Amino acid sequence: MKIAYLGPQSSFTDLAVKKAFPEEETIPFTTIPDCIEAVMDGEVDYAVVPLENALEGSVHITVDYLFHEADLAIVAELTSAIQQHLMVHPDWKDQHGQPEKILSHPHALAQCHKFLRGTYKGVPLEQSTSTSAGAKFVSEHPESFLAAIGNELAAEHYGLAILHDHIHDVTYNHTRFIVLHKKHREVSIPHETSLHKTTLMVTLPKDRSGALHQVLSAFAWRQLNLSKIESRPLKTGLGDYFFLIDVDHELDDVLLPGAINEMEALGCTVKLVGHYSSFMLS
Image 1: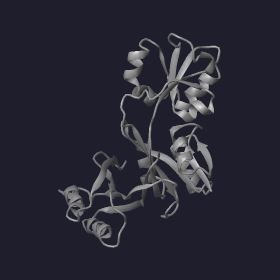
Image 2: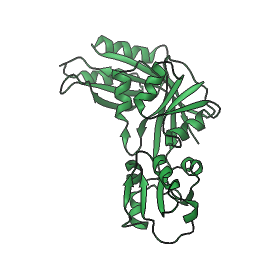
Image 3: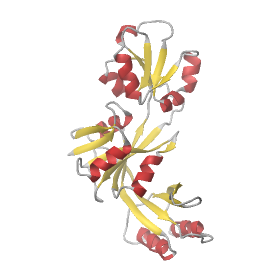
Image 4: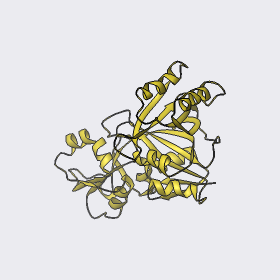
């Protein structure tokens, strides 16, 4: 089985994939659309891409591509802790003082702002295309006292020493990754299932007053809990949106089909994106 993931190697997506699919062949791709299209074209069996981060919010390109471009199903959700560490080349691990500069992806630099300001105030920060790209650069320039921010997999892969661990400012920093496949099916993952979910994409009838209220009522009176609802542009004109809705309920024979039928009776277009298990990766 082949699994595409958002690379490069030692990225946080790579770390999640290795935990969820330790025995499978994994292939890094440069962009999220590349990962998704690899499944659509039959180049790989599954793709794992980020969907949402607790600090940065939704990954819009993932949501939009699933709505506008790809007819794929979410078959599993992986939630993984994002733990940032400051790493240096081993030749500099006992060096006192401040590094010449610190490299990482801009999101990682932002997530460690308080630490960097308090411990390395004045040290130049340089953005890289990914956390692993910053670690790779440090490993290739042992002659300079440089530092990178990334995960433990990057430190191991590029032979770097962790100088400070867990330097992220917010303790609960997690990312939701989704596993995509051509068909709705269960996938075996060696971690405990936390809950079952269903994801829908709903387009409201145009210029109908109270349509969103009626959609939400279809879930409310059935006591179906929504863990997420987010609007995204339809790209057909200003004010035109579709809604991404996560329901904390498995796709049963009564409640969810009834809610979908009610929304369609209201004139909504409903796309079932996935019904799947959610896994918390250790």
